[in-house]
Image 1 (cartoon, rainbow over the protein chains, first blue to last red):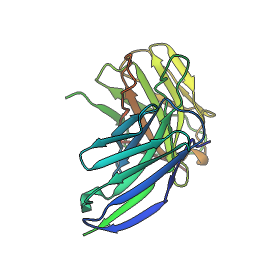
Image 2 (tube, rainbow over the protein chains, first blue to last red):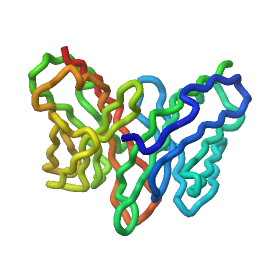
Image 3 (cartoon, rainbow over the protein chains, first blue to last red):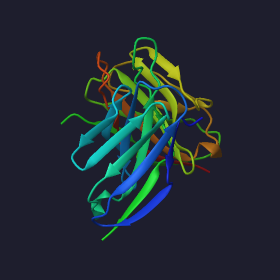
Length: 115
Length: 115
């Protein structure tokens, strides 16, 4: 069963606009990660947020985590055509003593940025 | 440069045949994972390994097996290929260290068609 579920399934915006994707999950987590996948390629790690963190930034990316609501959001600011890709959240539910390095992925959000 | 490779990139096989997909990483990572990606399901974990001689079943392990005889390789075998195993397969790896901050590094994928 999927741990993370992204919303929306697809998002189409114009260059320069901000893109927001949401992820909900079901069980407690050790950390939550976001990955990007360009068409026909493997996934690439974007950012990791620990369960005790609420917000994290990396360049044009901003990730928030609300463990009480079991949800996360990924914001891409000032989007570019090159940001067109699928975005996945992945959760590490952890094991005894911390991470078990095993991730459960959501189904992804397809982002299209129009020039 | 260190990398993770998969071979073949594309494979067509017949129902009932045994198929082995290769995954090779040069980072000396302990942890390796196999996923399948299907429309509507995102990525689902098939098998994973935390080191040599260690293998574990994931969410969708039926009909698949893996073996880990060295650090660099985790081949995935479909014992008797079925049409339901037509999919894109991704291998990933991550190092084992005492830290919550890690990422999975993905290979380019193998597109398998079972006819």
